[in-house]
Length: 407
Ligand code: PEP
Ligand code: MG
Image (cartoon, rainbow, N blue to C red; front, side, top):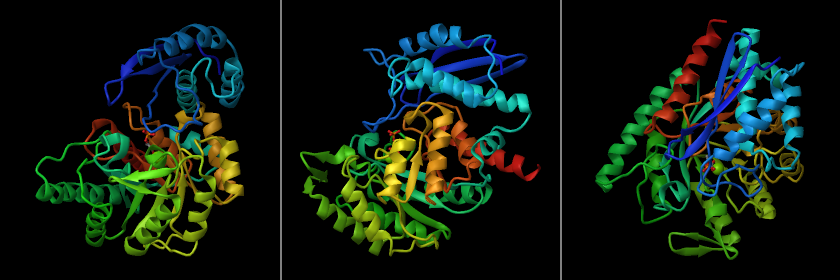
C-alpha cells in the first residue's frame, strides 16, 4: 500500500467536544476515520493527546505534519507493517508523543483503505486479519446510564439489556424494550433525562431498584438478560466504594454482587472493582464460576475494561491469574488496529470472551460494528437508542448482516 495524501481535521463528538477525523487516499481510493473519546478512562490506557483547552489541534498537526511526511509515498507490504511503522514513529510506550487518537485515526483509515483495495467488506477484512470467523455479536444496549455518564444520578455507570440472536431479530426486541422502559420510568418520575450514551438517566432510592425494573423487562422479552458496567474505579475513594451515600468495603461489594447474581438474571459484570484491585477481581471471578447465566452461557462473565485497557500484555496477565473471563475491547485504549487485534487474539487464546465497545463520546464512525462482527465478538456495546451516533452502529450491524447473508 502506498498512501498519497493524509488530511486530519477537527469534528465534534456526541458531547460537543472536538475530536480528530483523518482522511487518507491511495490511488483512486479514499477512506475516513474519526476517533471517539472516553470519560471513565482507565489510567493505563494509551495517551489521548489534547491541548490545554481540551482541543485536538496538536493531534491534528501531528497527523498533518509528522505522520503525513513519514507515510506519503512510502510502500508498505501490509497494514500490519504500516501500524508497526506508526508505533515506531511515536516511539513511546503509551503513544504520548504523537497521541493515540492521532495514530488510531490513521490506522483505522488505512484498514478501511486496504479493504477497499481488496474489494472486500471491512468486517471481512477484519476477520481475515484476525483469523476469526465472523458472527453476529449480542447487542449490549445501555438502557440506563449512571456514573460519570449521568452526573452520578446513579452510582453504577451502565445498566445494559443484553439481547441474543442475529441483529435483525435482536434489534426490534431491544427497541421495544427500550421504549417500554421509558414508559415505566416516567410512571416513577416525569423528568427522565438522557445520559451520555443515549440511555435513560433516572434516579432510584436503592441499588436494587434498577435491577428489579430490568428483571421485569427480561421476564417480558425472551432471549434477554442484564449486564452491568459498575465502572468501579470511579466509585473508589480512600480504599472504599461510595454507593448512594454509603461506603462499601471490597468485601461488602463482593457480597452485594453475589446477592445480585442470586436475585437477578445477570449475564455479565464489567469493572466490578477499582482497576488496580486485582485480588478482588480474582475473588469475584472464582465465586461466579459456579453461577450459570440465564441464557445458558457457561457462567456469569466478569469483564475487564479499565483493568485490561485493550492492552495485550495486561490481558495476558489478567488471563494468567484468572482475574476475569471476558475482555472489553476499545481500539482507542491502545491506539492501533494491529494492537487491538493482538488484544483479541490474546483473549481468545485463553478461551475467554470478547465484547467490543464504543466510547461514551462517540462520532458517526461505525468501525466498531465491523470490528465486532469480524472478530466474532460475544457482544457489542453501542449504547442506548437516544442518540444518532449510537443508532448508526446498530444500522451498520444490520447492513453487515445483509451483506454477510448474500456473500
Ligand atoms: C465504558 O466504561 O465501558 C465506557 C464505554 O465508557 P467510557 O467511554 O466513558 O470509558
Ligand atoms: Mg466500562
